[in-house]
Length: 79
Image (cartoon, rainbow, N blue to C red):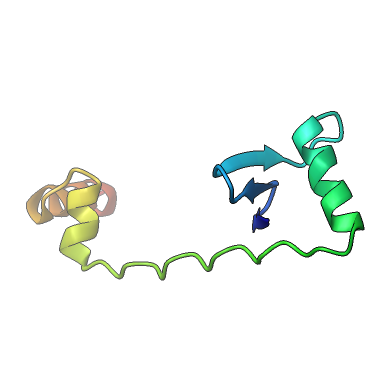
């Protein structure tokens, strides 16, 4: 049994092997034969919802404090 792994492959569920959509790959050829037998791969899982960050968290992720950001804005806005 397989599960789609969008956008470029499938997962073989028996051993969690990722199989790329590559015509010269023997695992992919086995997958295509399995599909030709009338089987259907499980759909790809839904991606997790994005985490909403506060402005301060976004600045911290960029390595900036609010004060440092203010200094940068002053540099840009001050002629």
